[in-house]
Image (cartoon, rainbow, N blue to C red; front, side, top):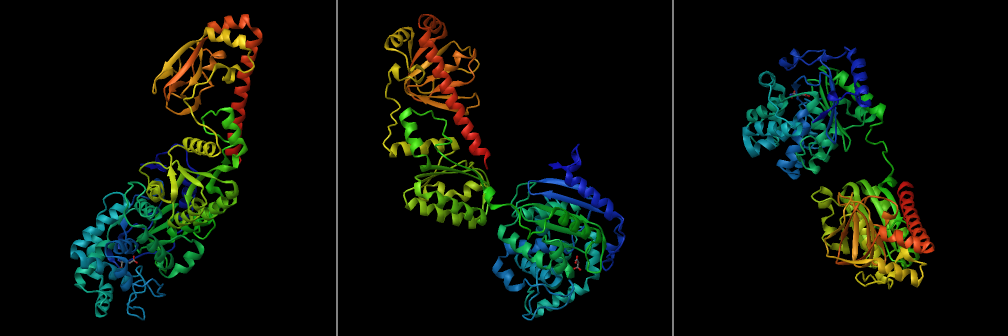
Amino acid sequence: MVSAQDSVVELPLARFLARCHAEFSADHSGEVATYIPELALANPSDFGIAVTTVDGFVYEVGDSNVAFTLQSISKAFVFALALDIVGPDRVEAVVGVEPSGDAFNSIRLGADNRPFNAMVNAGAIACTSLLCEIEGAGMGERLTDAFSRFAGHRLEVDEATFESERVTGDRNRAIAYLLRTHGVLKGNVDEVLDVYFRQCAVKVTARDLSVMAATLANKGINPLTGEQVASSYAVARTLSVMTSSGMYDSAGRWVYNVGIPAKSGVAGGIVASLPSQLGLGTYSPRIDDQGNSVRGLRSCEALSSHFGLHMLNRIGDVRTCIAASYDVGSVSSRRARRPEELAILEAHHAAGIVLELAGALSFANVEYVSRRIQDLQPHLSHLVLDFRRVSSISEAASHLLTGALDGLVTHGVEVVFSGVAKGTSLEASLAGWLGGKHGVRGIAPLDEAIEWAEDRIIQRLGGHLDLQKPTILAEQQLLTDLSQDELSDLAGLMATRDYDAGDRMIGSGDPATSLLFVGSGVVSVRLPSGIRLATLSAGMAVGEMALLETRRSADVWADTSVTCLELSLEDFAGFRERHPRAAEHVMANLARLLSKRLIVANNKIEALASF
Ligand code: GLU
C-alpha cells in the first residue's frame, strides 16, 4: 500500500493538505456533540484529513489515524448495501429520495408516510429494518463486515458509544415506532434500533473514510484491495442522495460551494466522494449549528475550490480520446512490403485507417469518435480501433460504438480491434464484439492489426501475397543496378541455407560476418524480448547491417520454411576489389533502404506526435 506519508519528496497535494491542516487547526469554532453522552468525550483539538485516489494512493495529514464513530456517515453505506442486498424495488418503495428540509432526527415523514430520504434518521432506520427482515440481529455483524470491506480492513464497534446511544436514543425510538405505525418498519423496534445504533458506533479514522469514499468514487471497487464491495447501481444512487441530502441542513450550500457528494456525522467525520477521482475523509469533532464538522467543511471547501473539483465543472476535452489517427500509407506495419504491394498501399492509403483510442470512453467521447468515423467513410475499407490506452468503456459509449460500427460493417468495411488486454474489465465490456459479433475481429497487438489491414487491402486490390514464391537474385532490393556478370560473380560466392519454421537464423550479439538474401519464405527480426522489429520476405536481405556494424543487434527467426543465400563479408570484400562499381551500388542501395526506413519512422513519429 502506498501512502504520501512514506514518500521522501513532498507531493503537491500533500503540501496543500498540510497547509489546510495548519490553517484550519486555528479555527476553534463549533462544539463537540453531547446528545450522545459518549461523544462528549472526544478531544476537540483532533483534526485529520485523508485523500485516497482511485488508483489507491493515500494522502494523510494530522490525526488521520484517530478513531471516532461513523454515526450518520453509516447511512450512506447502509443505503448502498440495502439496494444491493434487499433490492432497489423494495428499498425505493419504502424510502424517498427528496431532501427533507427538516433536521436529521425529525420525527416527521413525507406526505406519503415514507421517510424523505435515506440520509436522515427515519430513512436510515427504514433501510436498517429492511435489512433486518433478511437477517434479524445478525445484520449488525454483517454491516460491520461490509463497512470493513469498504475500508479495506477490519473495523470494530465502539461498545461504549453503542451503549451510550442505546440508553439515550429515545428520539430514534419515537421515529422507529412512527415507521412501524405506517408499516414501513415491520420487525421488532428494539432489534432494528440495536442494529442501527451499532452501525452508527462503528469506529473509523479519517484515512478509513477516505478509502471508503474512494471505493464509492471507483464504482464500488475498493482501490486498495480491488474488491467489488457494492454494485455500480447502488453506488450511483447512493452518491445521488448524498448529493441532495448528505450534509444535513446545509446540503444546498454544500452542493453549491463544494459540489462533491458527501455525508457527515455528528461525531465530526465527513466522507466525500468525487466519482472517478478521489475519496476524501476528514475528522474534527467540533461541529457547527447544522451538525457538520467546522474544520472538515473548510478543508473540503478549500480542496474543491483550489483544484476546481466541483462535480459539475467541465473536465477534459472529448477529443483527447483519440490519441492518434493515421492511415496505413503513413504508418505501416513492421512487415516490409514488396514494391508492387507498396504501390497498392500508397495509392489506397485512405482505405485503411487506425484510430488509437485513449482513456475512459464515455458517451461524449464515443459520440465524437462516431463522427470521426463517419468522416472517414467514403474511402474506408479497413478500420483498426486500438484500445491499448483505453481504461474502460461505459454502457452508453458501448451503445454508440455498436451503432457506429454496425453502420460501417453493413457498408462492407472490415473492423478490427487491437490492444484489448486479456482478463481485463475492458475485455469483458467488449466481449460481444470480440466474439465475432458485428463482423469485428480482435487481433492482439496493434502492429499485427495494421498488418492484417494491409494484407486485406492488397488482396482486395489484386496484389499477391504468395510469400513462398521463390525469387531470383536480380530481384533483391540490395542488388538493383548490378549487371548480369556482377550478379553471377556474386552468386558464385554465396552458399544456400535452408531453415525450418521456428529456427533462429541470427542471434543478437553474435559477430556480424555475413549477410543473407531471402529467396523464399518469411523471416522476422525481433528483439531478444520478442518485440518484432520487422518481417521480411523474398527479395529482401537480413543481417545486411553487417556491412556497417560488427555485431548483430537483433535475433532473426524463420517464420516459415526459408531459403537464403549467404554471402560472407570476407567474400564480399574480394568482390568489392574486383567490382568496385557494383560494390558502390550495393552500398548506395543499402543507404536508400535505410533512408526509406528513416522516412517511415519519421512518418510514424509525426503521426503519433501530432495529437
Ligand atoms: N446515531 C446518531 C443518531 O441517530 C447519528 C446522528 C448523526 O450522525 O447525524 O442520532
